[in-house]
Every structure is written in C-alpha cells, then in structure tokens.
Amino acid sequence: MGADAYPDDAARWVKEASNGGSSTAAISTGVIAGGISVVLIIIGAIAFVMLRRKPEEVQDKSWIAGSPMPEMPNMGAQPTQAVAMPDFSAQPTQAVAQQYVAPVAIAPAVVAQPQPVVQPDPARDYYNDLVAKGYPAADAMAYTRQYYPTFQA
Image 1 (tube, rainbow, N blue to C red):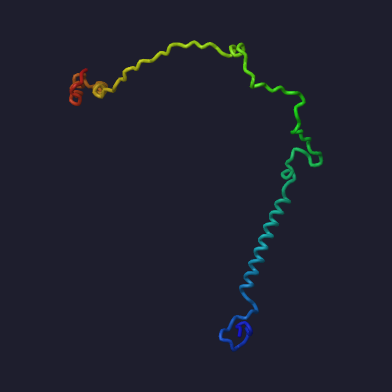
Image 2: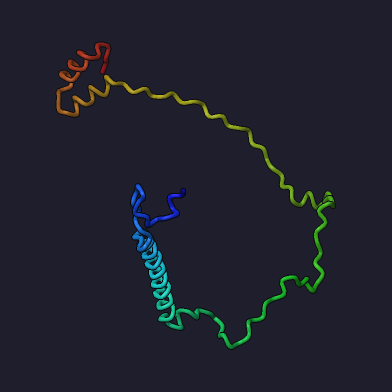
C-alpha cells in the first residue's frame, strides 16, 4: 500500500536512494560543527585578550580595593540654622519705594529732517570719466552731449 513500506523492494516502480548515507545530513552536520567551532574560537580569542590585559588598565580606580569605600555625604540632611525666607506678599513703604525710583528728565524729542538724496547723474559720471582719461574738456563735452543732449557742464 504505502510507498514507504518496503523501501528496498526491487519491484518498485521508482527506485529511491537508500537511507544508508545521506549527503544532506552530512552537510548539515558539518555546517553545525563548523559554526560551533567558529563560536568557540571567538570566545577563546576574547578570553585571551582579556587575560593578557595589564592590571593597571583593568584597575583604573582612585581608591584601593582593600580600603573601605569613601564616606558618602548625607544628601537628605537639613540645614542646622534656621533660614529666614523673604515675605514677598508685603508691600514696600513709600520711603522705600522712593529710594529706588530716580527722577527722569524728559527732553523734547528732536526729529531729524530728511535730507535730500543725491541721485546719481550718469551724464556727469561719463563726462568726468572722459576728462580723467585725458580728453580735453571741449571734446569730453561734445562726446557727452552725443549721448546726453541736455547735459550742462
């Protein structure tokens, strides 16, 4: 009935591989064994590094291991003297209030008058540039009037 009843039967239609030595089982066992060995090597390397470390590097403390711990202060202690808190609800007297108020002289506000803004004159700039380059004043005037007919020197 079942195909698995007689796996080594010669009369079977499909010949299956025998279960004697499965290659997939051997591969998976090898992978598991390799993984375990890698983990053991890593643990061994870490243990080796930790054991080789110098004692000065491991013991970086300001107190010696054989001595008792330093005394910790009592953080919950209350002050020994009574501390007077100021009464913020009290209103200052007139004399005290006058002591802190300085008289302020109010000067009349001086309003600055707006100054006229000098507009750039391209014709004047062109004329001055020609004169600076060495042109005679008459030639500079003639050239400037070609581009700016209303220019006056």
